[in-house]
Amino acid sequence: MARIQLRDVCDHLSSARDVDGIIDALLAYLRAFQADWHPTLAQVDSRHDAITRIWQRERGRLDRRDVVIPVDHLPARLVRKFFRPSAFFNVVERRSLLSRVFRATPVYEPDRFEATQVQALAAPVAWHSCIVLPLADQDDLLALVTLVSPRRNAFSAAAVEQVLAIRTMAAVALARRLHASGRQTPEARLAEEHSRRTQGVFQERVRQLEIEVGALQQDNRLKAERLELVTRQAEQVEQRAVVERAELDQLRQHRRAHEEQERVAAQHLHDAYSQLALVQQRLNDAHETMEFLREVFEAMAGEHDDAVLSRTLVQRFCDAFAVDRASLMRVDDQSLRIAAQRGMDPNVAGSVRQPLGEGVAGWVASHRKPVLVRRQGDATPVRATGVDSYNSDSFVSVPLVHRNRLLGVLNLSNKRNGLPFDETDLDRAMMASAVLSLAMSQREATNGGHEGGTATLEDDPPLTGRG
Image (cartoon, rainbow, N blue to C red):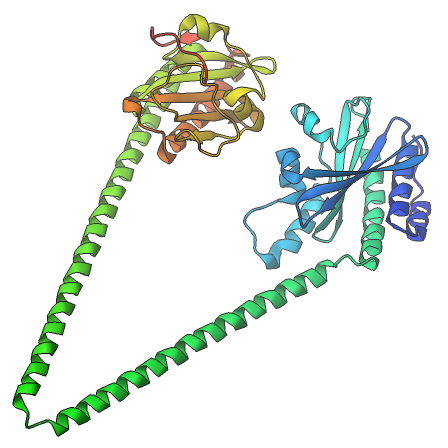
């Protein structure tokens, strides 16, 4: 392994005449640093949240590919690390937050199941080790440098530290060159955003002033009309009948106003009763959920067998929340098998093997995201197979994850009376999955693994499909 001369790197990057020259020098140094390293650089288009170009240097030549890879197609962990490190910050704090992220955790190493998503950024070679580093100008992410190697554990801490030094100089050189060629600086972008916000405030103030002026004009018109009415009444004071008719008309208007007020008050009262009924229903749901969690923790405290505990928890969940079909699937060598179920044919359930990434349960396990479908046609990332007969198109599928480790998937369908699942059912399933994950993790830590086989809760008609 050669040692990188940072002064030479700085001179070459500073003397490069264009962006391609900077990238060529950067990739050449990384390629020469270790013979089995294959570096690539992916340009980030922050306006469209996509990767638009990828450079690689093989056989002494710089190649460039024009691509369109949306950020959402990259691994979720990489996106959270470099593109969206937090969803809870305001504009003033954004720069310091992103700068802290790039400085404290600058290296991303993908997991094994993320290799296919990272492959679009890497060189077209077989590899076993991979790291991704950002090139950023303050809070502006310019590019991603991807290093792959066919060796395992090819990126030691010392090597990564030298690469980070090159990365910093390359980011500065690339930012200067892009700004010289017309790219907007972060300061200019912040100033433009501030100007836009200020203009919006002024426009809103002008609109409010226009509304106030219109209200004053209307008030003046009303006052003028009232003055004219008083003058006319003074002139016609002797016409008693006219005055009495005017008073009678006024009384009628008051009565209509009172009737309108009564109607509005009745509507408000009806709305208040509706909200009260909704709150009462939510309180009942919360009470049922807490009662279920209490029973689950009692079962965890008294049961020491993993298979029996899984059957017990699935059984109690179905009974507590009126679900006729449920399955608890465990991860087994890049696939899912049913460890406990209710409402399925035991023979069919025992033979089910769902690869990760395929079907509803496979998608949930691969992405570690829950899926709630209320009715057919809802916008969801996956669709049910539709092989079995269900009493509705609604179902829930949530991952079982404990300490960032995927343990399995919990699937729920066939809510009694054909009712669709809602957000309350999803919250309950998420809480149940957290408890199940905790219980599974504790049992595996105690027993050194989980027992095989499929747990059957009762004899039901054969059902397959969503699980």
